[in-house]
Image (cartoon, rainbow, N blue to C red; front, side, top):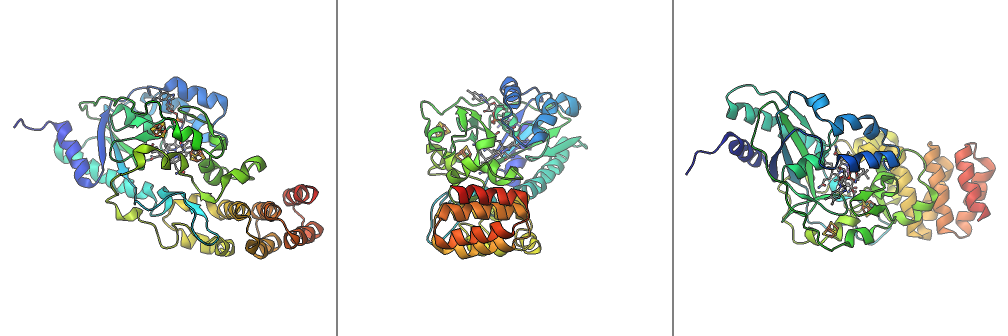
Length: 375
Ligand code: B12
Ligand code: SF4
Ligand code: SF4
């Protein structure tokens, strides 16, 4: 048997550390640079201003990673095989599978640090290295696709055989030349199930998502009021969305994750919605410490809970929403409670809205109340 090369040894170490996928990419402009630039030009990034601000670095990695000679791209399966995007009894919300367990940024950063140490051991010297998971000014999917880890699905997620798209991506840039891998062929064929399944019509076309319409963006990245015309299409989703992945044939019969940190924390799989309205700032932070849900912040998360309760159309939710409209300290939450009461309707909801109209001092909340009362 031939002696394994340095590249092969580093890839083997990545798998031993626990990554499910590994490949090597050159440090070059992304293959779909023009598509990225057009996307920003169209404004599809919405409030995610950091994407436009760092576009140059994403499109020309040499600008900030001039010393790097290769990028080791890794994928980590987070599929716990629990059902996704499904309704359960009670008034329940839906949290996207990626956020059921611990924050993947923390999990993967620790693993990439271990990979950095392994690279030094294999190279027999200290190699300059920089790790990124999601948050860096780099295009994770482009690098991973170049490294042959997976192919772009029409829903813009990267897919791999045996794992579908339920895996996270990260990369370790190295001041060390390694043997690059070949990209995989695209295996979507004529299918378009993901494009047709999106409840908010967020796809402009295959491979192009208008993030401003995506439930994942609306529930996590959008910081203020959720556009009124999109709320009723958001269903029970209170953080993220998996619909365009759930329907993908490559996401059936996948192997489960080996990473116990991604197993659902108690009560997070499909949480009862009404008790979530009582979370104070301190309770929210304590409950979701180390979880990706923290990113939405209390005000964003409770806003989403109100929308989901409205979409449940369940009269049992009216007393809790009326109390939120009366007492929640955050105007953003009260505004969406008003909408939810209007969506459920009935005498109790109308009385709560009239009472709030007489008393509410915040102009945004008043505007929401008036839209409902005048409808
Ligand atoms: C911004 C962002 C979002 C935004 C925008 C999503 C998007 N599609 O861009 C929002 C908030 C909506 C989002 C949602 C989600 N995200 Co996100 N997100 C990112 C982030 C930070 C940047 C992505 C980006 O650069 N978008 C810009 C646009 C232009 O890229 P794009 O839509 O992928 O378009 C590319 C392709 O379509 C391709 N292309 C264009 N035309 C064509 C034509 C052909 C034929 C082909 C083959 C390709 C192709 O080129 C384009 C440019 O690269 C990355 C992390 C990172 N640093 O890269 C994570 C990342 C993409 N997200 C991730 C995840 C898990 C999600 C969610 C599944 C979370 C959830 N369950 O709610 C959803 C999925 C929604 C969806 N359908 O994409 C993972 C994806 C893992 C994977 N297996 O693909 C990443 C990589 C984070 C990570 N490190 O793991 N996300
Ligand atoms: S994540 Fe949900 S809302 Fe976003 S594109 Fe996919 S199906 Fe549509
Ligand atoms: S649902 Fe079909 S088109 Fe969409 S990503 Fe999966 S295979 Fe590709």
